[in-house]
Amino acid sequence: MSEEEKSEVFIEVRGLHQRFGENHVLKGVDVDFPRGKTTALLGGSGGGKSVLVKHFVGLLRPYKGTVVVDGEEITHMGERELDHVRQQVSMMFQGGALFDSMTVGENVAFPLRERGMRDEKEIAKRVADALEIVRLPGQSEKMPSDLSGGMRKRVALARAVVERPCCVLYDEPHAGLDPVTGDSIDHLIKHLQTDLGITNIVITHEMRSVFRIADHVVFMKEGRVYWEGSPQEMRESRDPELRNFVEGKSEESWGGSGLLAEEG
Ligand SMILES: Nc1ncnc2c1ncn2[C@@H]1O[C@H](COP(=O)(O)OP(=O)(O)OP(=O)(O)O)[C@@H](O)[C@H]1O
Ligand SMILES: [Mg+2]
Image (tube, rainbow, N blue to C red; front, side):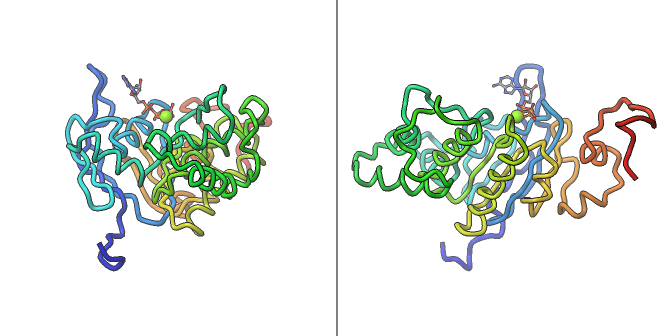
């Protein structure tokens, strides 16, 4: 496919349903993720965000509906074809688990070896490049237990980019990080988009981060896309559901006084 023919959409989801027994988690999701942009995927806990993105790499198969990745319908692909998709689209899992018995370098090299790469020079080069990208150059001999939470997240990110994907899915990359470390992760995510042209899809609860990095926001509720738009449109929206989310409020009210009273 030539550059001009490439669609503006990188991942297209149509009528996606998923259920686990009686638990109907996705109830007809229709959404497009724009190529070369950063999309923030928001919504309450248990709303189906992680379940949704697992369909983008074939870790879950739809109960109904379709997922098209870079122009190819992946819904009925076999494992071999999916392998190719997983090279293009990589995932930084919720929790970003590293193997504690392996060095940083071995962790980052893991997807390459899984794929059958045996050229040790090439592996070392790819690992070094990936660690460079996440600003952890020369750390490959360290053990994960010697790293801070933020550094571990970076290693997980290095592992997600070592195969030079064109799309990265991040499942709560800020979870458990202090705001400053979270900010540095945001810089990396944005760098991947702007300097390497990667399509980013970021599941997060951090509104600060949404306003920093997102070009597009998709808000899920009860198994469907409830709202989508730009961060600016989100900020200006009067929709009560969105407002509560942006302002971090639950259904209950704290009342109008004291430290937690609304600003302004
Ligand atoms: N493999 C599975 N088997 C059975 N139920 C599952 C499975 N994966 C997810 N679920 C259920 O699907 C629902 C949605 O889960 P999901 O992890 O997608 O939520 P989420 O929006 O990512 O929430 P959070 O913000 O807490 O991560 C939950 O009720 C969960 O228990
Ligand atoms: Mg989740």
